[in-house]
Image 1 (spheres, rainbow over the protein chains, first blue to last red):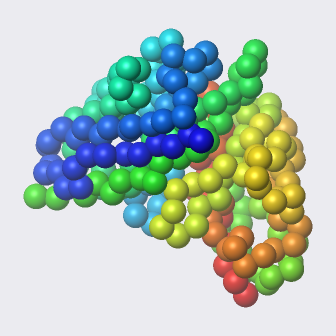
Image 2 (cartoon, each protein chain N blue to C red; image 1 turned 90 degrees about the horizontal axis):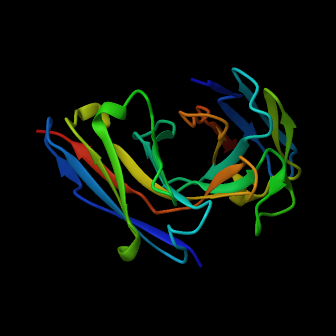
Length: 124
Length: 107
């Protein structure tokens, strides 16, 4: 059974850096085709993809946020860390991590399952 | 960026109804389209991947179709637990965009 859980601060001040950790079990991030992504959802709004890290340490970021985001993995600890710099109140959202799995030999992939999410509020 | 547009944004229906939600991509994405269900206070849950493949454990009343730019999610006979918000997401190219969501409410 695959599970993921997000952890980090619930409240950050504007201009601060947010660090979120995704701790997972049931899979290895060294397995070909596997990845972990981060997605956020402001209260009452839609989902927004942020970043993705792959088994081979390749990374991809949302272009609109790329300058502020860093995603890293610690395979031995089964963790993925997302940092977001220069936080602003508009970054208030529930942040989710999710397991990325694909159909081997193809470019098809999907997120399943997701963590429960963690609400981060940006306020002074 | 590939824009994903869902319609309708909200929908009222009754238990037992057949419901169809549409998702349109701003460019062709082949079958790189996934559907998620999100109940209030919960994380999104995968329903359909690669446009038409039913995720294990998801009831067969859910089905997906389409390719290229136009996709549909159909629920053949609504059950009380299906009242939720549904999102499509393209996995064709970065940024991996989601639709704005379709909220399915009880009539």
